[in-house]
Length: 184
Image (cartoon, rainbow, N blue to C red; front, side, top):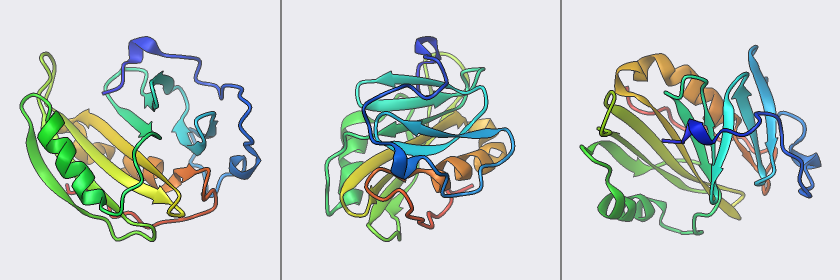
C-alpha cells in the first residue's frame, strides 16, 4: 500500500518530460476526476483530492482517507513471460497473511499478466491487491496495482476500472487496451 503520510502536492509536478503526447485525455474523464500527466512518463485519470507520492520508481495515488491506492511502477523489466514475473514475485514477496485469489495471463495487445490476492497488515482490516503487468507498444512495461480493504472490493470496482482503462504510457499515449476486470 502507498504511504499517504509522504503525500506531495496533488497537482502535476513540473519536469523536463515532453508531455505533449500525453496531454490530451484518451478517454472521457468522469466528473470528479482530472487528467494527470506524470513526470514519470505516463498519464491517467485521478480522482480530485487524491494525493500523489513516490517511493523510488513507484508513483502512488492515495485517497484522502489513506484506505485506497493506485500505484504505477515504471521500473519493471521487459519480459516475454509476464506471468513468470508475478510468479517470482509471489515466491519472493508474498505479504503477511497472503491468500491468492487468482493469477494469469492477460489477453491484451502487447501481453500482460495479473495477480489478485488478499493479505493482512499488522493493524487494520484485511486488504486486497490487484496487480497487472502491462506493456505499452511492447516497449515499456508498467506494473499497475490497486489496493483497498477487502470488504470494500465490490464497491471499488468502478474506480479501479477508470484508473486501469485510462492509464497511458509514454510509448503508446493513444493506445486503448481492453483489460479484463478483476474477479469479484
